[in-house]
Image 1 (cartoon, rainbow over the protein chains, first blue to last red):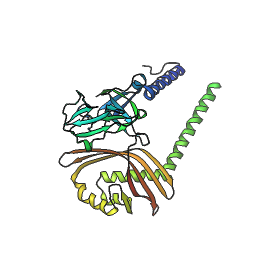
Image 2: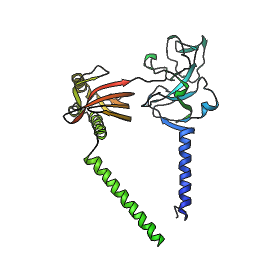
Image 3: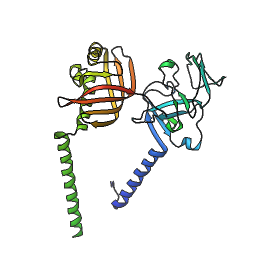
Image 4: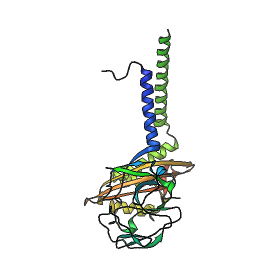
Length: 161
Length: 154
């Protein structure tokens, strides 16, 4: 069985093209990450692989409820997976685990156990997005729930396993 | 004639490659630079902690060591001595290490994540960005400061 075609130059060019395409896809279109931690349980389990569409928010704006991957502004970069909860200027509040935005109750079908978070109302800062994990059984104080900028977002999670 | 020349060129190229690889290997093994020494010290420190070898682990710290958890050289040693046997397994992984050397000191930024399994089977996972300060004492790089870096989303 022949592994390489007779004309090695053609084989080399083909291999180069495939590598180039893979690099382009990895740099600009899709990326995958392995998760570490339980803040997105039960939606995404610890050690799962998440697939990220890096072009998603160049076409459509960020939607409430989207699962996103974002990273710190400075090195060493740390990547996080969280769900988008509220946008700039909106008032967020939790009463007995139920989310209220601008005083209106928000349905969160992705939350299996609501927990009992009680958080006083706070306003999301200008040009920021408030993100939070799905695991509401972890106390609010022990959860990492930052307000991030659009430029911190790597992309939208399109799948996980 | 042309084919022979190509063969000769390939042979010379391969020979150069082997010589370069060998020289690089000799340099790394026998004449490591300061950055390589720092990397080796950090990797040894992590390995010794994972092996629960506290005696050798603590030798990588200076006597005036301080960290963001309010530990000193003494309290760190006592804490580990009293608690290390509670853990069945400890796995520490460092990545994105950035080393800046300003002799006789060095500053190392990295991302660390640790998985810890207690003897009761409980699993703890933590991750964070840290900045480690080292300086040379007795011709060896030693840790004198460890601080956690805040996450920034500006």
